[in-house]
Length: 115
Image 1 (cartoon, rainbow, N blue to C red):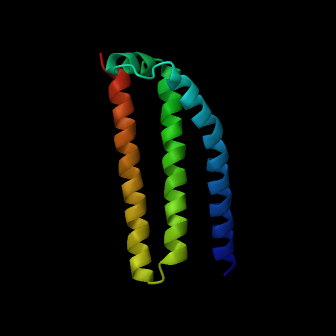
Image 2 (cartoon, rainbow, N blue to C red):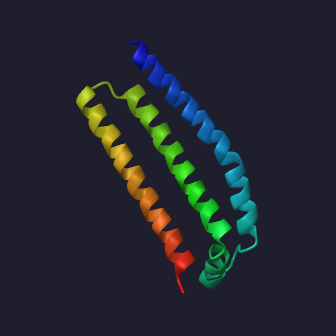
């Protein structure tokens, strides 16, 4: 049972850490994108060609998707009582978040590297 408690404590800490990390990342994103607001794709591509912008946006996506997956995992663990359904839901949560992160990162890289 103590292993279960340490897992829960780690999960709680990671969720809080990603919450805190998202604050400056969101502020950066909103401030940074204000300059290209209403712009067309070439303007956004130009913005993304800056390695710092693409890198921090990638970090934002990584932290954001990890935080989202962690939150959904908590809901699944708290509200699904059937162990089989819970295992399936947890696997689906991981898979869907990983796929969405991969697609988002691929889109960012595609725009950033487009010549």
